[in-house]
Length: 80
Ligand SMILES: [Zn+2]
Image (cartoon, rainbow, N blue to C red; front, side, top):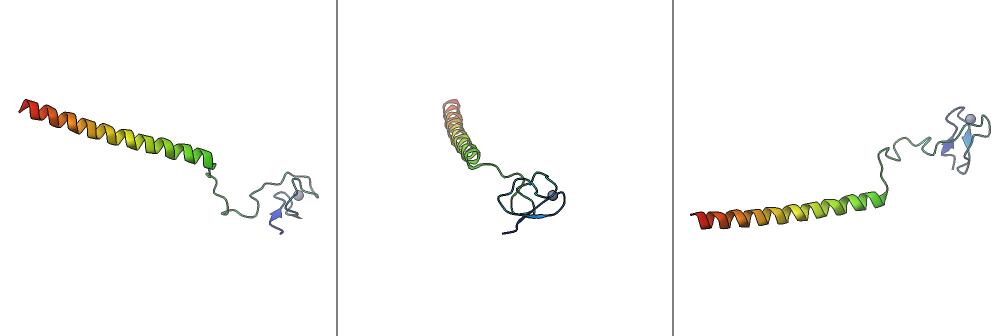
């Protein structure tokens, strides 16, 4: 497909081209498809690690809230 074109001179280039055959400029991968790839896309391993940390944080928070509620309840039960 002709989805690649030189950002310098606009020459249509084959998809395997790394440099423009006319002006010699380096070819960007995202040329011609502005909205196909998000700029802030992060690799899957980082997302997996982030979600894992997030799940651990939620579990620890839940345990902390439950433990705190039990301790608070027992304290009130002993105090009153
Ligand atoms: Zn060019």
